[in-house]
Every structure is written in C-alpha cells, then in structure tokens.
Amino acid sequence: MNTETNFARYLGRFLSEYLPHERNMSPNTLASYRDTFVQFINYMKAVKGVKIEKLTLAHLSDQCVLDFLAWIQQDRGCGMATRNYRLAAIHSFISYLQYEEIEQLEQWQKVLSIKAVKTQKKAVNYLTADGIKALLNQPDTTTANGRRNLALLSLMYDTGARVQEIVDLTPESLRIESKPYTIRIFGKGRKTRIVPLLEEQVCILKQYMDENKLFENHRLKHPLFYNSRNEKLTRQGVTYILQTYANLARKEHPELIPDAICCHSLRHSKAMHLLQAGVNIIYVRDFLGHVSIQSTDVYARADSKSKREALEKAYVDLIPENVKTRVWEKNQTLLDWLKSL
Image 1 (cartoon, one colour):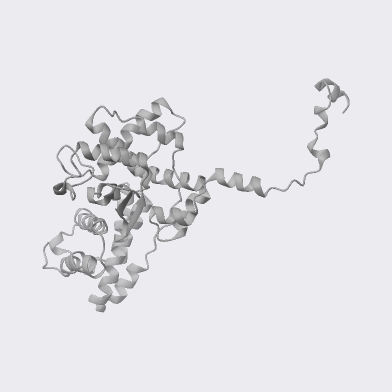
Image 2 (cartoon, helix red, strand yellow):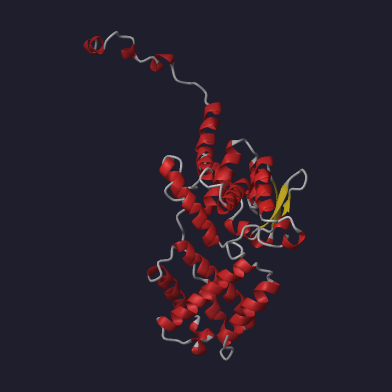
C-alpha cells in the first residue's frame, strides 16, 4: 500500500497491527474490514475522482461517508444490513484515529454520529424434520462427491455450525475414536465450543474420513471438507452444494423445502428442533455458541408449535355451556332451524 498519505499510513497500521494484535480480531473480521476500505477507495476514485495516492484523512468526512453508504446501496445494490456492516468498519477505524490524530477530533465525532439504519427483522427460515430428511436423501452416495456432501450437510445440521465454522474444520477438530464423541468448533470472536456428536453422524464421518485417509497423522491439519484441487471448500462452494440439493428436494417435496434457503437455514433448523424437543434454551445457547441468551431467544419467539402447546396447557375453560352448544345443531334440518327464527 502507498504510505505517502496519512490515510494510507494509518489504514495500514489499523489493519495490520491494531486489529490483529491489539484487538485480537479474527481473520474473517479483518477480511470484512479490508473489503469495506477497498470499496471506499474504489468509490473515491470512481465517483469523487480522488486516486489512492491522493487520498487523505481529510476526505474521511461525515458527508463523504454518508455519500459512500448511499452509493453501495443505490449503485451496488447492497442491502441495509451490508450498509450497517460497512459503517461499523468505518466507525472502528475512526475510533482508532481518535487517539492517533486528536487534532481532527471534531471531524471524527461527526463521523461517529452517523447512525446505523434499522433493518427489518426477518422471520426465522427453517426446515421441518421431514424437510431435513428430504434434503439429506438427495446426495448420490454411490459417488465420492455425494458421500462428501452428505457428510458435510448432515454435520452442518447436527452441530448447528455456521458455514465458516464448517469450512474451517480439520480432522484434528474431531474426537470420534471413542465415546463421548465430540467436535471442537472455532467460532465467531475466536471462541471455541465443544459440541457432542451422535452415533449416526459419527458413522457417516468415519466412512468419509476412512475413504479419504483423513485419520492419518500427516492429514490431521488438512481441511476436513475439500474440493478437487485439494483445497478447503469456500463458503460459496458450500452454498452451491446446499442449493443444488435443495432444488432437487423441492421438486420431490415442494411443501417441505422453502423457496429461499441458505446455509444458515440448517443452523436455524437445528435450533428449532432442539427447542421443540424440550431442550432448555440455555443449553441451546451454548450449543450454538451464542454470547447472549437474547440471540437464542429469537428461536423461542418463532416457535409457534411450542407457543400453541403452552397456551393449551395454560387454558382455563371459562365459556358458558349454553354458548358452547349451538342451537342450530339440535335441529334435524337446517330448514327447521330457519323456521324457528
């Protein structure tokens, strides 16, 4: 990066020193922040006519940031959530600059005063147990790719793992030599959680790992799920696999597979099924790796089946008997009842 301008100098330190070392940010967060500033630099060049070698901190004004946020929504077609992610990255950089360039504190405070927009909360998109079965019946297990994809999708569902957590797995993450079977998942915010595995899932994994010699010592740090180039699957690759089988399952069972489905739908499905089975929401929170119970509570609010059952248990019959008995049902015919009116 060109370090002749103060923007380039401070951005370089922010991404290469401050975030990874002082804040201990994960590589995924660093990549997201980097993408934000790549877009900002491209915007300044394409729209404002400011090349990177001329870009300074003076250009990082509140109006310029607002124009950039409007541009990514209107010209690039990004949603409000993406707009808020980009703003969060800029706010983080500005917070860093407050202590590095204190002379421009008023400018930084104006940028920090830009608010995130409210986004509409979408309904939890999940599959029923029958929907999951229909989905997992689609991989052709007579092929190597089909066996890999079955192991991949079933593990995503059984562990409730995020797609990035799945692609980051290695054979050494698994403890399936003897009971209790577990998997170590490296999650958001550099947090690690241990998730139990069921016998049926372990059988699928063992067959897949035996076939690909993933139990050998020199393969323990190899990606658990990889492509034909021997590289770990990408998030886009896993999404493509899921969409392919979802489309097949939808043709057979259109009532079971929603029109819109993504990798996170499997995580949502597992959470809903655990709650419907009566698992305490605290355990579900730990299983999913949520920091706050409020994140998990969205599943309890979305579970209409559990709500209905709870209401039925709490129901007290207060309706008078004469109201319950409908007069017209005592008449032999509708005509007799109408004549009596």
